[in-house]
Amino acid sequence: MILFTFVVENDKVGKSMNGLYTIGLLVVSNIFMTFAWYGHIKLQQMKVITDATPLYVIILLSWLLALAEYTCQVPANRLGYVGNGGSFSLMQLKVIQEVISLLVFTVFTVVFFNGESLHWNHFVVFLFLVLAVFFAFLK
Image (cartoon, rainbow, N blue to C red; front, side, top):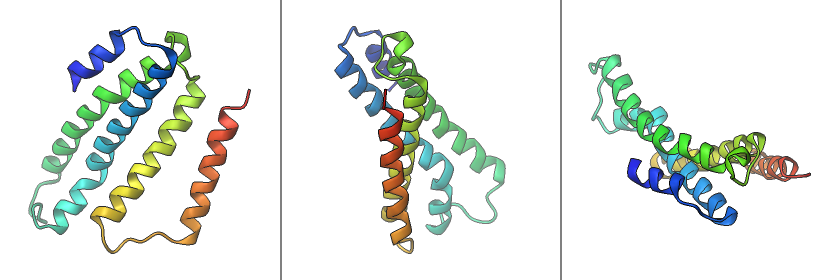
């Protein structure tokens, strides 16, 4: 993964590919982030982690996943930032990242936590996220 992000960051790609690489890295980054933040809850449900598992072990495992997340997040921001020849302003990068984060979290929750379900208000939230992206990209 580190090699991939190094190659992407140092490759002279066009702006359209640059934007796609950025979004792809943000998706991978957010998958790792979601598992780092919430995976331990599923592991506890599966009895892989018990109440006897020390909190510091859970935190260290989460940090290892967060390290993988950072190996994608940081290059995505560097690659995607318009000041580095990318396609997006900082504000646009942040809005894109937040939308991806919530979409990844939603898929993670629906797939791994069967008791969780989507309700009408969640779809309203997604509508507002789409509007947020629209307004973030207005000139």
